[in-house]
Image (cartoon, rainbow over all chains, first blue to last red; front, side, top):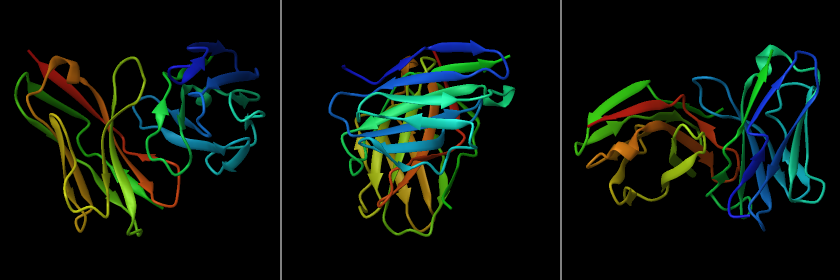
Length: 114
Length: 114
């Protein structure tokens, strides 16, 4: 696609439920990043993929969070047993490779846990 | 760990005037990149300007320029001839040369008054 696409745009879920957030990067981009942006804050790094493998997952806050990128393109961020503190905008970005400094961002998924 | 600080939560400027947004950072690295991103209400992060730490010359992109003071670890953004479309949240960000993740500041909300 022309840009990074994230779906859904907004997601409301009940506390304790499981959610999946999808990111479709720019075609041909091998590097993919997930960030979490809480209200009034800057984005915080969660995980980075180079190809199919997670090259750095040190930003994942706990084991309820998991992300996959099985074919090196689309990525899914999975959150189990959601908590109200998980409410945030989840941003995805991609770049041609991990050496290229220009990352292109999607419009994010706003997750609200009620 | 690297940190990025933006001490101005909000700034305002008259249309056609000039405004400067401040950013300081802390790192023990000698080689890195600095960025300014714009985030309008659509939530999509848009790269405004980028500076390589090894370059002494300040980066310029049309009406946007930076004042990079490496010794002081300061990286301010100057917007000249401000336009209504410049109104947005602006984030300063840091990336190590050998790394891939971006570390963001807290952001500055810029208002442009007609």
